[in-house]
Image 1 (cartoon, helix red, strand yellow):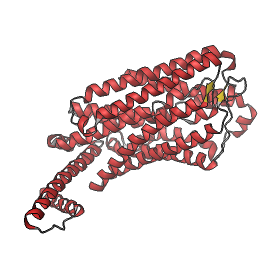
Image 2 (cartoon, one colour):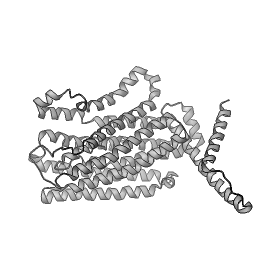
Image 3 (tube, helix red, strand yellow):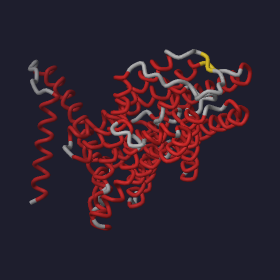
Image 4 (tube, rainbow, N blue to C red):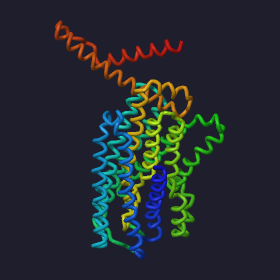
Length: 432
């Protein structure tokens, strides 16, 4: 799986870099056959790797309790049908390009809605779970990731609206052109600014969560060295947006736009993959330190999900309406990446909540990163207790009302508060 993900990152970087560079160099008009074959290869990569990922996940979760709790068979089937739909659209684009030397822009919009729409569902549920865990356990670990995922969710919403409006206002048919690819006319400056703000904030919040999660290593390599190393991806990412604040490279861009475009694209082509690798490493390092094989696998799946998610979230290049539509295969991975993150994190929370010995081993390990697992596991455990107690209370309440005719005034919120008070009392006694 590691080799597959590494290969995928290379493909995604090439896929997005080609279209970004074409905006400066003048499209693919003179090498159409070569670029058409290259586009077919990127589309085939999407088809193959998507199903490999789903197969691996299905095999590992078939017998787990998460399979029932998360209704994984339903999500898996949804992802499978969505992939069939995206592959069908990619095949239609390839056939249309072969037969008419053009493609319909509606195909691009359809894939945006399928991929980002499913990502919205997955990220929406995951953000809901983090907020519910935070409500039960007030932890900065949980809050930091809740904020990061919420910002990713907002960015996905803005992406669907922004790209749909922009592409909807373009010509419906895209043809090869010897001129620079497409025209990047922003019809909504508000949406454009919101997109840039949310993409930057989602990166910064996820970076902050990762920094908190890995802060334990300040004791191992030293505080200064730790912050220097972990800040490199953040500085690299923010540097790619310097033109929005202070365009330091404006004289060079005006003097030689072609050379500037090539150098700038090559320099910042790996901005998101580099940050994504850092975010994924936090979960991968944690997985290596856990003895429980099941939870270790969940953490690895989560790390792959977050790496693919940040690497694939690059829809803006499609606004250039390139021919062939490079960048399309990249954004098609958004749904699968969100799916991996969801099942990885949620499965870990359930596993930790159900296994008291696992919770104890996490605490005894004294691993800085493991605090997140401990907190979400406890929060999920507390939620399950509340659910069972409330269910039992309702049954007892109905029985009392039936036999005595007296109705109980105890509400669900009061039951939750009572459980919280008991849990706090037990915790206080255990600490004495």
